[in-house]
Amino acid sequence: MPTYYRTVELAEVCFLSEAVEFLALGRVPEKQFLIHPPKDENGRYLFGHDGRFHWEEMPDNFEPFNDYPEDFFDENEFRFCNIEMPERYQETAESYHFGEISDALSASEKPRLSYFSSLQEEVQEEIIVEAHKAALFLSGVSQDLNSFRSANSKFLQRLDSAWAKIYQAIQSNDLKVQAVDLSTWERLADDGKYEKAAKFIDVPNEHFRIGHDYRQNSLEIGELRYVATRVNTTELERLLEPVFRVLGAISVMQFGDTIVSDFEGRRSPRRRGAPEIVSWSEVRDYIRDIEREGRLPEKKEAVIEMAIQFCKEKFGRTVGRSTVQVQLKAFFAELSAKNSAR
Image (cartoon, rainbow, N blue to C red):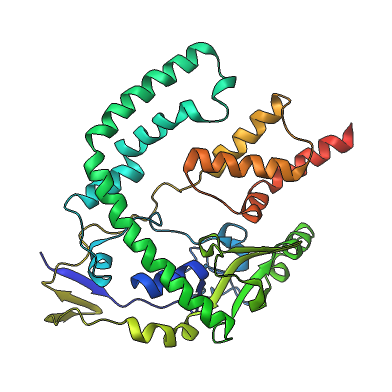
C-alpha cells in the first residue's frame, strides 16, 4: 500500500521539550493552527496563527498538545535512532497506554496507594481481588512488557543526550529560552488583560541546570515561576545539522501537493485526541472530595503537593507545581471566597 506525504509547516517557536524531541527523534514541531482564528479590526479572520503559544488559548497551552505519550515511539523513530524495534512493540505500547496492560498496572497499584487505608473494608477486598487478577495477567505479558521498556530506555538515553546538547547551547548563549512569568500572567489575567498577560520574556541561562526536567516546560527559581518555556526553531538548525541521516533513496510521485511513495513509513499514525496523560478533572474532583471530608490542608502549598502526589500515583507522571497551580486556580479562588465569608 502506498504511503502519502505532505509538507509540514515548521512552527517558528516550539516548547523546550519539543526541541529535545526534534533533535533526538526527528519529531518536527508542526504549526498548530487555531480552530477559531482571531479577527482584525474589520472583522476578517486572521489565518495562520499558531495556537501553540497564542494568548487566547492560555493557560491550556502552557504545555504541548501531545499527539501521544512521551514514551510511545513509532517505526520511523526506531529507524532514525538506529534502535531495533521489538516484534510486538506497537501492540504492547498501545495496550500499555490505552488498553489491558494500562488497566492491569493501575489495578495492581491500587492497594499501595496512600488513600487505600481510608476506604471501606468491602471496597478494599474488591480492590485486592482485582489486583491479584491484574498481577496474573501482567505475568503473562511480562516478556513483551520487558522488551517494550528496554527499547524505551534506549530512547530515553538519546533524549538525555539531546538535552545535554541543548543545555550547552543555552549556556553558551547560542540558544535563547523564553517563557511566561506565571505570577505576572495570573495578576493580569485576573484583571481581564489576557493579551497583555501572555508576554514572553527571556529566561537567564544561569537558571538552567543539566538536571533540569525539560519535559515539564516550566521552571521554578525561588519565587519566580516560568511556564511555557520555548525556543526559536531557526536557532535549532545548527544543532540539527549533524543528526540528519540519509536512510536510503526512495522513488516518489507527485500528486497535487502530496508526495506518494511505495515506501512503508509509519504503520500506526499518531493518535490525535488520545486520552490525556493527566486527567485534570479527576485531580480537581479528588481535591474537592478531600475538602468535603474536612481533610484539606490549610496551606496552599500543601494542597499543591497533595495534587502532585495524586498525579504521580494515579497517572504515573510527575507534574510541575506551576501546572497544578494553574489547573487548580478556580478551586483556590472558591476556597478563598469561602474562607472570607466565614
